[in-house]
View 1 (cartoon, rainbow, N blue to C red):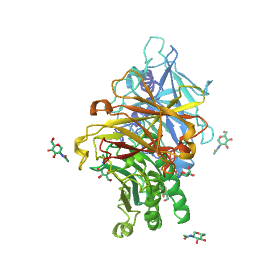
View 2: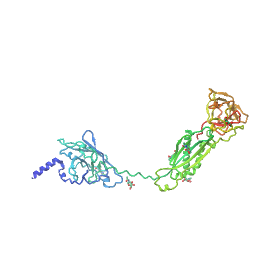
View 3: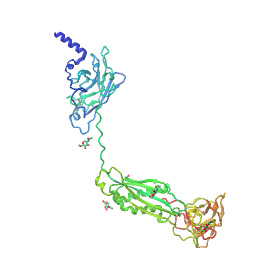
View 4: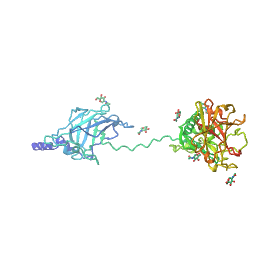
Length: 518
Ligand SMILES: *[C@@H]1O[C@H](CO)[C@@H](O)[C@H](O)[C@H]1NC(C)=O
Ligand SMILES: *[C@@H]1O[C@H](CO)[C@@H](O)[C@H](O)[C@H]1NC(C)=O
Ligand SMILES: *[C@@H]1O[C@H](CO)[C@@H](O)[C@H](O)[C@H]1NC(C)=O
Ligand SMILES: *[C@@H]1O[C@H](CO)[C@@H](O)[C@H](O)[C@H]1NC(C)=O
Ligand SMILES: *[C@@H]1O[C@H](CO)[C@@H](O)[C@H](O)[C@H]1NC(C)=O
Ligand SMILES: *[C@@H]1O[C@H](CO)[C@@H](O)[C@H](O)[C@H]1NC(C)=O
């Protein structure tokens, strides 16, 4: 009888490997790997998925030590890592299979083996590798490799598809594995548990902003003969100035700028330059807004004198603020309070500066006749060395701008320049070219009486057609600057009257070298 039992035991042992005794003891307490009561997470260790090493039947996982935040229990702060278990198919547990393992490339003292899970359901099997001897300081980066094999009869499992019971929903070849602490309380597992829901986004303390823009706008009025647009160089220069002025003002007001002022748009008629103030800083700067718009207007209309190209235009400079839409809504204190932000505006309709010219009595308003001079002249070399020509261009303007008793004028008979009597000898002559002419014609200057500071290009007697695009080039010795030669309040500009044959109509224009860029 004893023999029979022994034989039976032997045959069972043959069938179920080393775990014969345990099979009988499987308590069926746990349906799922790791078939025991233990803490999968939080835990100090993680395992990477198994990967095949080379062309062998060797599969490796890497241990990482990663202390979860705010976890202070044993599994996070103390647990060692003694044993690795993989949820295995019962069929792999063939008698006499040859298995081996390495830890960091060194063969382990004890080979892995299959085992029936003591508390698992009947037949539940694990591949176990014990006495790893890892702890929080030695486990990080440790590589554990298991080489699968068969018994002599070729039975056994040699790859993960054959070995592993995949986690629910996972494909063949996916493995469940756990790393046990010596006391079996902790069993950080592969696959890792689903990540905890992401923490709610941090509640940044809300703040409100003044989103402040400075606008330079230009509207051509009915008397604007040549509508003007801001140049990119002007936009850039205004932006640079505005940015610096706000920095300076903020500093004076003990305020800070949240976002510096930069050029936002430069569309020709509108230049906008925007920046931001945070919370109460806008209120600190607000009292300076009126002074700032006046300062900014001076960039467009230097010294309050309308530049020739802006006559007939209205220039408006505005500082306007919108309340920012930042993450501020949570702060009820600020929400209910009134935000004070910089706001101011100033505007000027530009008319020609009053000047002591022409010296005769005639209708000198712009738009009095259909003839006009462009607000910019061009410069080129003279007909001889050491001479320079300043060329003024004329146009026939839109009838909508022309009004008054001279509106029907059809002849451009002469042009008169406001020029210094003292520099008469510097003027070498006029070179004139009506529209359609192939070349310039020389015209001797005709000076008025001494004291009148008036020089004429005459006779011209251009028709509307000849005048439209005509040029008068004034040739000066290069040693004399145009600024000295031509008189008036502008720098580098000349005043010109265009006369009709009756001499009663003499609309006056000024031409300047280039737009003013601060
Ligand atoms: C950790 O605990 C601190 C203090 O209780 C808390 O402020 C922090 O939000 C916690 N971090 C996480 C990720 O739970
Ligand atoms: C981890 O093990 C190493 C070597 O076995 C040992 O020197 C070290 O003190 C252990 N560290 C901890 C935190 O137990
Ligand atoms: C700015 O702060 C300085 C030093 O704290 C103080 O002397 C000055 O009066 C303040 N200026 C204004 C405009 O509040
Ligand atoms: C604004 O510009 C000034 C000068 O370039 C710089 O010192 C400052 O840090 C800038 N401020 C911000 C908020 O970018
Ligand atoms: C230009 O500025 C004026 C005044 O701020 C504004 O009314 C107008 O809409 C702006 N035009 C453009 C094209 O931005
Ligand atoms: C200009 O000419 C038109 C038609 O030729 C005439 O009706 C008008 O009265 C004239 N205007 C002046 C100011 O002479």
